[in-house]
Image (tube, rainbow, N blue to C red):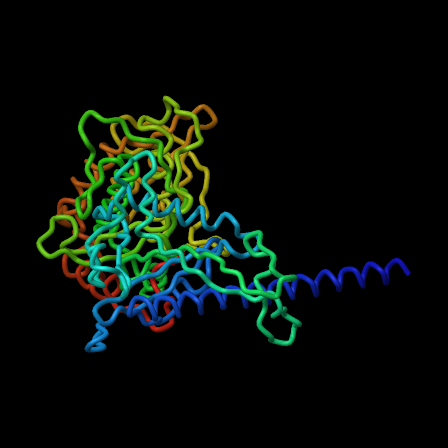
Length: 457
């Protein structure tokens, strides 16, 4: 008897969970449809597809085309990112979105950070300076103590009815309980607000999908390519550390005489780094596309106490740690990712420090990275240092930002003969011709139709 009761209770819970999942999917679809309708009506946008495959924990992202209403000619593609905070159990989503806009205001579209755009709607008045075009403004924190630029956030009102309950048979559902509102008894419409903002679109995709292309290509990833990517990542760390000094379109540099902040990105992983464009004639991005960092919903100051073991503080320490983890994940294409993750597993091993001091350190770099003697040994050592930790009597060997930058600048454009002074000659995959071909075919290659769209929420 009790067994039957337990089985019946379990079946009811499963049915309730299934119904809740169905209702949430329909609510998310309704929000997406309302977002699409709003930007189609108000901004001359046309919805193309979702970005990142599915909605994230805190919001959704869609790819739109902006077109000229007079000629129907596409002007550009844009990303619209919106919150799911009106849904039950996602009440903190609005705060994540506004936190992202706040930090985008500080970074201001500097070279290695995604740019938030202020696109005016069709009906914007001339008094506001609107001409229906992007006014060239990124997030502009006029007051640094509260830099959320509300002009970049569009609050979209959607109407929901309290009498369109879901009966499990495919009918529309209400937003009852969403965002703390319940209009189920009134039978009348109520407005819910969905905050959204617009970002630039980068068509080459993210590093997660670049790794998939690398795996399909096979062979070895050139160290000379990895150096160029690592330089971009160090520039990102500089931007995070000196966020108050960043300027729109400018390269991230270390300001003299200023200590780095403890700011952590808190979500550094391959899907949150996008490939941008080549910059012809540029010393750092003339051969390989620059990388741009996205997704600042969780960005905040480090909760770790300041420590003498971290020469530039805990924020720099952990940003460099996770940047290095991304780079080794790109390099070790024969190593399986952790299930459900964008990383290869992290290890804890002792490794002899390359260099005159031969200092021992404890590093979380993967064995396949540490043991790969085909890599540039300076790069291999830098990643091991960035991923070193303080434990078991060992001190972290993490470099300062200036040291990491100086190392990258000294190696990223080094010729193959100098980087690999081997009696047997330069490895075949590191020659100028091989590196150029790898970049053209794998990095710059148009993503396969099977690849998800580039930017994730």
